[in-house]
Length: 130
Figure (cartoon, helix red, strand yellow):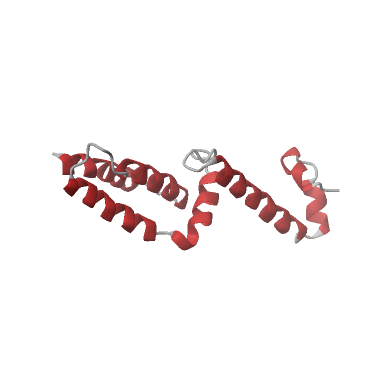
C-alpha cells in the first residue's frame, strides 16, 4: 500500500502528460518539481519507502540538469506556469531577468525599420525603443 502511495503521483503525471494532445517543454519543470516534492522522504516512511524515494530523487537529479534554465524560461512564457511557483523568489527573478536580457539582445539585433514599428506597442516599452 505504501508503494502505491509513492507511485500514485507518477501515474497521475504520466496520465496528464499522455492525455495532453501536445505536451510542451514548459510542462517539464513544474511536473518535475511537483514529483520531487511528493517524493521527499518523511518521518512516517518505512526504511524501504525511504530507500525507494532516495532512488527516485537521485534519478530526478540527473535529468534535465544541462537545460534547467531553458525549462524554466519555457515555463515562465507559458501562461499556466508564468509565476514559476516551483522556484524560489530569487530563482524566479533570475529567470525573468534572463528573459529580459535575451529580449533586449534580440531587439538590438533587429533592423531599424522593424524596431521603429515595435515602438508603437506598449508591451515593448521595457526595451526603451526610439
